[in-house]
Image 1 (cartoon, one colour):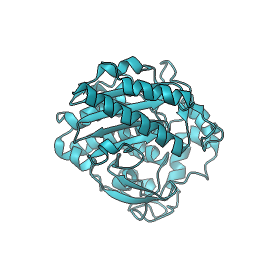
Image 2: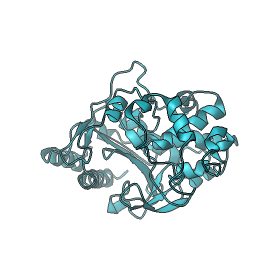
Image 3: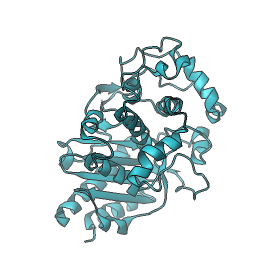
Amino acid sequence: MMPINTEKAINQLSKEGLVKDISISVFKKNKYIEDFEKLNESDLFHIFSAGKPFIASVLWKLYEKKIIDFDDPISKFWPEFGKKNKQNITIKHVLTHSSGISITSSLLDHDYIDLNRVCRWIENYEPESNPGEKISYHEVTYGWILGEIIQRITNKTFNENFNEYVANPLGLESTNFTLEGKKFPKEVYRHESSELKTIPSIFKLLLINKIPMISGTCISTSYDLAKFYNELINNDKWLNKKIKKEVTRVHKEGNDHNSELKFTRLGLGVRINSKIINIDDSISNSETFGHSGLVSCVGLASYDQNISLAILNNLLLSDQLNEHRMRTIISAIIMDIDRMKI
């Protein structure tokens, strides 16, 4: 059955100049809904911070194997990190964006291309707040810190860990954090409303994948991202149910000091019932969790309705227009799912 409401929504948004290339994938009750493929660009997309849960999922697996505890201090695995009053910062503080290590304005563009230099910078960072004191979104420090301890704990690269614990077992064939000779993702464009008045030089380097950011360099498809969330709510063999409930419950909530004091609820690597990912009234009362990326991409899931979906596109908008875009598309998707009576 053709998802006519979603098709109409995309056509209307296209007329408004709010969509360029777009890809949508949906799972319902552990079943992939192929009907939405008719609307899809199957190409790879940069998904930016929508890939943060992929990073967290490696730690979920290490926790399941009792290799780490979420309350372990980072310095247990990275001793040099403990300098400058950072000895009490835990893995959980980073996962909930409350470590006090979030502002990167002292880094120059060329610093970003040298991960060793970045690590030394983090070691000498004086936190802007005490651990757990306030939420300040860790745009890139999230991936740097968590990626580094994953590599130190396992003596393997982050990509090796991601493939071993997440991509291979879940069959995520198109998700990676480096290009590795594969075809380039869709080019990213900026709408006139975007707060990014230009795509900064850092992002230009990021877009050609020359920065080992881990947080921002994730490349994926809507199918892989939606499948990840579907497996998270349905596949107890990959991750046991108790840990799933633990990582998708609220661990920290409050105003985000790096996002105009917007209220947010945070699990361990995902946002929960937050406006940024939960923007459709029809699923507003369900246990919804997920993550967005650079006001252009989102992946989310609802336990109650057993729905997982991903919307990827490559046109950066203002927060307000992106909310309108995502609300329009998600509302249409839910209407189409109801029509299909799945």
